Length: 269
Image (cartoon, rainbow, N blue to C red):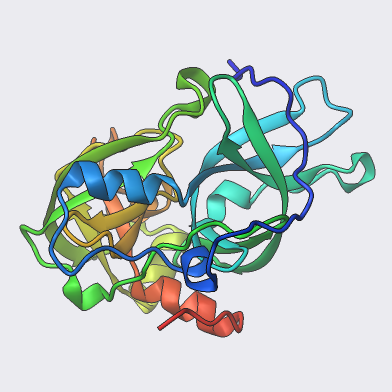
């Protein structure tokens, strides 16, 4: 089932008056901690849906996941959200979708800048005016028991282009993969991650299809601590399980910082 949006058109770059460069590049909160309603309202301005757009396709838009603005015209999402091969002959492109009222969205063409398959992260650059960028924290700021929230587009093809916020805590910081007890569970991906292991955040909050790529952030400061991910992590974390659990995971933000550095994208101080 596809989400029916009307009057979609690629936005043309335009100048926006009365916005300082700082306002365009970075969202800032007051020194005092904000409550979740205030924080979520701020974060929503930087969260978009990610998918593809093709003019000649019967359903022009295909929504695949969530992304968030990080610097200038760049957004971060999961690599698996933009992993499908584009139909270049039919001018299919990546796109971001920005809510513009009920049943409407502003569509911006996007290009894949860099992908990190080892951590399932991708960096895209989109056309038009920049979006307010979320502030990136550091992975060391994340502690077990830390109140967190994430904002994204769950089951977006059915529920529509309405950003939803979920809250919980970081319930554990665990390895992305642990040694398995049976040789039949030693897949190629398991072996790769055993060779280069890293920690992930296990959350006491529920994400749904479409939440992939959502920013995980501290409730009080809106600083991004990670990127929501289930498909990639469960491929090795829960390889021994017959049925996947309902646990939600997130990739720590330090891997986002590395991705941006490798792409030559500078963050605001």
